[in-house]
Length: 246
Image (cartoon, rainbow, N blue to C red):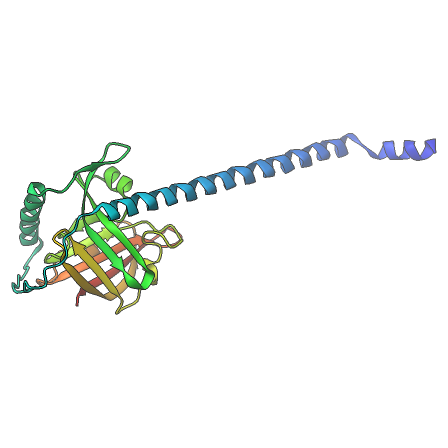
């Protein structure tokens, strides 16, 4: 019996003890990392759900009048020759926005914004308010994107020009996560604050590098267009969906 015990004891070498400690350390470290990753995932999901809730609260609080169908639409054709002319039109629209009665809201980080309309995409079953920051800074846009899809550049809702909207891809069903699944012919509905609802039909979809902003051009030949921008699932590129009033 003593010989057996001695034999077992002899096999527990210092090297074996060291390896055993390493294995224990690696095991507990892996458990710790799993807990950290799970906590980060749970917090991120909570944050996304909270953002969705805030967005829907903004949507439900909007006081948009019903569309007046007795007024003829699109009875004026404006031909845009270049970006400079379109920018002058943008300034006029901005002035009208500033004098309107839109309620200015403030994020928890102090960024101010207004709601300029709503977007509805029947195919992917999403409806959100469209936000517009007062300074258009990168930091402001990043903060607003946590709340709802946001105007990035261009014309105001349902006006002549290219109305560019950015939204997060959370790789689920929220915000613009399903925008990359849109196809040519799909419908995007934009409602402005006057209650006017216009339908835009998707005519192009492609990917670009994050620094490529050519999709925001205002050369629309006098037409009303909408451009949706979001990330690819790996966040390496941007998905661009182009739609034109149908």
